[in-house]
Length: 343
Ligand code: ZN
Image 1 (spheres, rainbow, N blue to C red):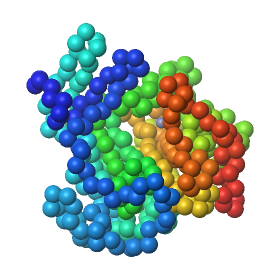
Image 2 (image 1 turned 120 degrees about the horizontal axis):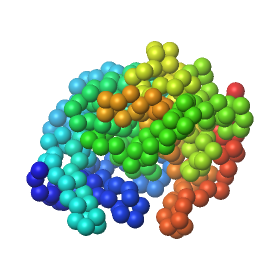
Image 3 (image 1 turned 90 degrees about the vertical axis):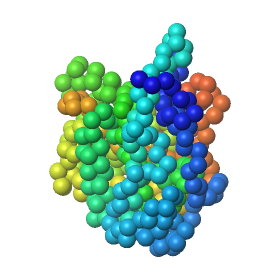
């Protein structure tokens, strides 16, 4: 083990009050910013933007040139928060200064060569290609020695801190389980041991019976505003079959996932008459070699908008000090998203 360098090494630090970890990436302060600030995003009109570092054939930071790609395009993030060659160290001083180095990889996935598209504006078949690219990344990165979790996500819109409107997402592969995944692994494991079924499988059965918070559904996936949603128009996407990762989906289920992602994002855009900002991502079983039959594949959509394209929810005041709070009920939000498109 080497000694810690807080100014250059990606590492995590423990908050001893919440017992939650934070990932620190001190070398990452030079990343480019191409997003707008504090405006409701109008749809991008340019199919190709010569100034975009994700468009085909354009130069990225560091002088690399993108290939003339036609479908999806994956590359290692030029400003990766995690690096594979990170020195290995850990410190623990009286349980008050706790930190370990964190190795990993960060990749970018361009969803389409078209600068002006979004998941909502893409064909379902093209979204299917993105689903297959996500699956390949989960399998490939998850198989690397020392990689125990693979987080696939998309930050959509300048409001969410997305630095470029070109349709793309990210994959971060970690040496450890990030906080949110670790919590979910624990609770799903306990539920499975107690009930012999997955937590989300049982939850989905109840939600389908109540039919109060369902947004849309197909043969393979259901999208709903969860009972416990924090964000006003938060959506949970759950597979009907209890699978633990994207890699266990059949071709039909992959197509079902692509279809429901289109359904959700079109509803968001319709409801708010804007290119709707959100963070979305998948939770899948850890890639530590264990089977994790308790883990049930799902995706979270966390949109920041409250009630119009310019009113944003902030987690402030009591929410920072006490607990999150919401005004609109999940049932009402689900109804609005349901009604945003004809059935
Ligand atoms: Zn989750």
